[in-house]
Image (cartoon, rainbow, N blue to C red):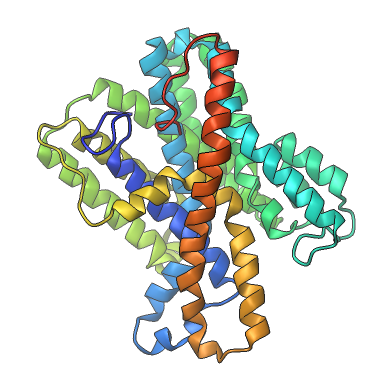
Length: 385
């Protein structure tokens, strides 16, 4: 990413967008179990705002997909000069070292908890089993497995998005090397990006598969890839263009996340294109702002940027905190009107667990693997997607 004054190698605007997205994911998973609309907040805050806070976790994952496509493509362009010259081995090593250590740790912990019979962690749905769930998680088809057999426990379920992302990145560098021409690759990406409403509509017969199938998620990733290719040609933006893209992006996210019911009646599955398009506008605005002279990150939101920097670790681990807090909430039997108070410890605990995993697992493992598998001194890992 472009260097910024606050944290070399990172883009503060994109970190902010990632922080916003992972926060929505956590709020969604708490809200499914302790909905804000049943608390005292419903007497003082608009219902549309409470719904937006509790029920946009799925949409937030698609923002992540767009960001992922943008960042990983941009890193590849900076390292290799062109997608047609992408370093296949280096690309896969970087993905492996970033994704696999935390994934293996998570699967191991979940397997132990299943074996101990811990509530919220036992795989007990008919047609499902622990060995098959492990294969699905490590084989990047957990989304397909859930579509066939039903939902897995929450800590397993979050891996559906990882399945989509990693299958895309297994094939993406191969397609780049095979096409070898941007004028061939770009139309393919455009078709994939614009297919999102139709691929979702075609899967309406299976609710899980409609949400978690490969093609809709890959459409969002393709949108991010196109954004990175555009940013390379459009390396400098005027301040006016940055503000215009930012305004369009914010308005698009508002329509999807706050006025979602109205937007659905208007365009149905087309609302997902509004979401990915708005996300791309914000990513491009962040890119443009970072390349402008005198750019300074917004003050007062450093905490949210820190959520963005830890988004992968928080995403994989937050359900441990959610389940613990919800269990305690139900055991104490406090008036549901005060349910919003349980969010106060849950959110910092999610951040702390993610920070612990980042410090002691993901960053050391990523650095160690890159140093050995790339046969050279590892680059700083703070800017990885």
